[in-house]
Image (cartoon, rainbow, N blue to C red; front, side, top):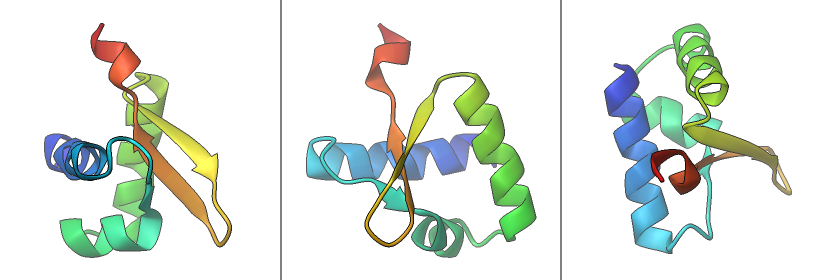
Length: 70
């Protein structure tokens, strides 16, 4: 499930050139998973520095961190 979540975030990164983040609600809907499980996976990805989280206008946005792979 962790890889599926990361792939959804990477797909958004590729489609927007890294300019737009993925909202929690959209990510939860695309992955078809509960909020608590999603939160645990996102916390793990954040600790591994695979993603970054920024405050958007309406909610938090999740971005892929391409610097991790370099």
